[in-house]
Amino acid sequence: MRALPPFHGGKLAWTSNSSMQMRNLLKYQNAASSATAIPSLDKVDFLKLQNGSDIRGVAVSGVEGEPVTLTEPVTEAIAAGFAAWLLDKKKVDAPRKLRVSIGHDSRISAQKLQDAVSRGIASAGLDVVQYGLASTPAMFNSTLTEDEAILCPADGAIMITASHLPYNRNGFKFFTNDGGLGKNDIKDILERAASIYSNFLAKGYSVKASESVKKIDYMAIYTSDLVKAVRKAAGNIEKPLEGFHIVVDAGNGAGGFFAAKVLEPLGAITSGSQFLEPDGMFPNHIPNPEDKAAMKAITQAVLDNKANLGIIFDTDVDRSAAVDSTGRELNRNRLIALMSAIVLEEHPGTTIVTDSVTSDGLTSFIEKKLGGKHHRFKRGYKNVIDEAIRLNSIGEESHLAIETSGHGALKENHWLDDGAYLMVKLLNKLASARASGKGVGSKVLTDLVEGLEEPAIAVELRLKINQNHPDLKGRSFREYGEAVLQHLGNSIASNPKLQKASVNYEGVRVSGFGGWFLLRLSLHDPVLPLNIEAPSHEDAVKLGLEVAAAVKEFQALDTSALDKFVQP
Image (cartoon, rainbow, N blue to C red; front, top):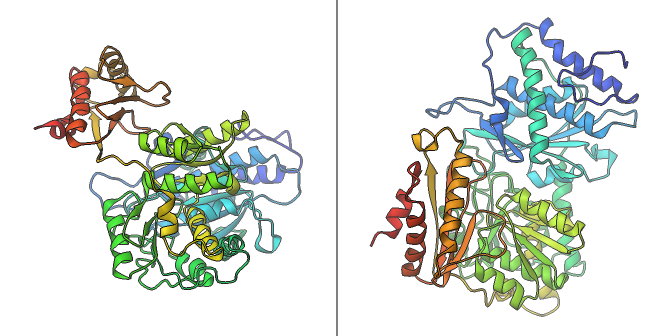
């Protein structure tokens, strides 16, 4: 076996017990030559499909200017690339095959991509377990659950989703029992996929039926665990939410299960819940807790039904937000404040890690009222989670990592950003408060964020970089953006009205005029987002004018949004 030629990408590790799977993978790369070929395949820049720690692309045609990039051959190659990466990572010591679980959200391209992913995994010699409609957190959990009757744990898991992006998009998130894959892992997988796809180009490609595919209702296991968690928090009461009226808005994504499979078994009334049916065209609103129309929809549902609480999820249920009985939104800084209050009751003094755009009022709330420590880090849910893990590794206790977007991960839940588990923490609070006679209804939650200082004005303005402008002088948009930030930082240093943040991990954060601004470079796009928070519109304009004056010489920077904001 060791005399066989190495994998084309040169990155597979050979072990005596995994050699059969390796051989299947090698056979897969050359299988297309004996099949009836599709005559033409487009060349693909696989690395352009990377979106941080995810893969995303266009899966459905019909939108002008957006050609399909996640074709079936591309998807199959990516899945085979993951299989190669997983074989290399696991270095199997057991005689059994590795197995990969696959789930998807409600997108219209989900079934086609699930079939292509299954072919890629199975043709590489690995077992495939399809979950069908599922949530991203459930896919990670499948790598932790130990129950051979349901083919768990999975050695790897793939979630087919593009979060809240439009209907024509789709993508992939990957997991092992160590958690979600990082940026370098995704790059590695895409490089392997490119090598496999090159064989399709050279020798042809055809669709072949998958083998070794099984189907499991894993969501029943996942939801059962959520129900058990709430019952335990209430002292093992069977229906700790009996009498509570809670409405759910799933935005026609994958989160509709939460009403019937979690809340109702706990005794809650869920009438008035909306958009629970999976519909990949998302006909009612964008399934996104940051979207104003989405939050307005769940708020109206709470008020119309006189509910105690409203819960809203994004498409794949790794993000969430809530609304109290008065219609007050519990998202962004308020959700972080609420979760911080709950976690700091359980772990006094712990560090709360957030992204860079959280408010100064939140820092004051966490540190002065709750007695914790606020560690403001970079944007990106994986950045925030990895930073919390890093802090724990050097002896600084952290139990919560959470972004303003609604991604929230807890140490107790294996650092998984799980929107359903986040809401379970709120339900635990409701149930335990009533069981102990300390309060009923969402006021229990609202009281926890009492004293959070919130700005009168909070805006985000997006300053786009024109990549075709001669002012770039051959530089990349990232280099140009960094030059803008460097110049802004230098100009602020000599301004007595403004003060740069002493500790800052992303962009330029500055306090002044009773508020603050943060100018940073987008993680993926040629954009410099500008966040401004201030006690009045007048003060916000003053901050905006300072930024406008500092960046005016950068001609490739489109400041029209900022110019409009600061106009009298």
